Length: 150
Image (cartoon, one colour):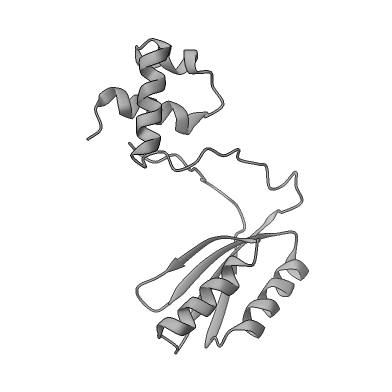
């Protein structure tokens, strides 16, 4: 069970995981050693999965975001395992979900341009039996965060 200080630590780390231990400890009202022990416990208990650096896609020439809605008439485990392997091998797919409703799977893809997306699309449909892929291109990113509301 998380207490208020655990939640403060997690919020601080979500906002900027590169902050010094001393800064985080000061913010949450602890000294460094107890703060460090809590962080290590939160990692051990699986609350902290990994620490990453978020990069600027535009600066890296990856300015196109595509949401690809995939429909299939294949719903057996072998097909899903093959499809999941195919998708996992495409580095431009940054998120991959199995959905409820009219769409079976949703992929978030970041790429350089439309031609780059077409290359990814062709690789996707070549490797697995897919009934339909409907792609939507993001015109503007209005909100994007990795911070969970804790």
